[in-house]
Amino acid sequence: MIADVMREARNRMNGAITSLESDLGAFRTGRASTKLVEHLKVEQYGMEMQLNQMAVISVPEPQQLAIRPYDRSSLSVIEKAIMKSDLGIMPNNDGQVIRLNIPRLTEERRRDLTRIVGRRVEEAKVAVRNIRRDLNHDLKELKDEKLLAEDDFTRGEKQLQEITDKFISQIEDIGRTKEAEIMEV
Image 1 (cartoon, one colour):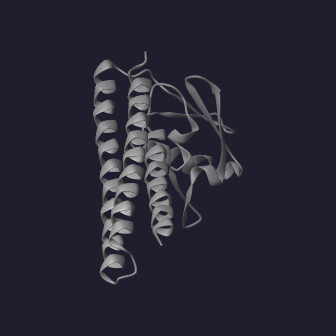
Image 2 (cartoon, helix red, strand yellow):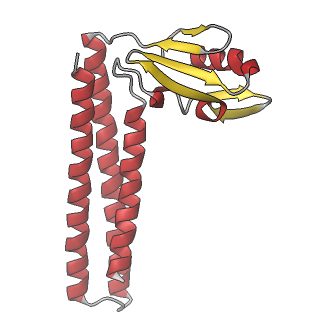
């Protein structure tokens, strides 16, 4: 039973880390990354689709993204979606490919982004701690129902705390790496 709880803890905490990495991957660092636009919502034919489902996104140069739609008629809707987004980048449409030139970040913007990264990292830590709280509650219920001995309950709490500490440390490492990437000129 304890092994099941620990497995669930690892799975759910991995989900928090995956979510954080995905979230931080969309941050503009002055360097082109397909993650910047791949999940951008584009409305076409009365449906909303992610950009990566409608086009091939590539990085031909370190400061540029190229978006080549599967259907050329979708160029204008993709262009509009990019302009409506909070990217702050003007698309260049040559009739076949949309190019996005990623401008260099100012020092002030870099500092703002590191603060936002710090907030996202803290949110991920809270998510991991909430998972720990929920699973501690599950362990307590198992103990109260006499399905878990007192020693096993204590061992389970300790294991859960160790797993939590490991994931919190991993989250902090991800945050430090992203902040260093943002501050890199």
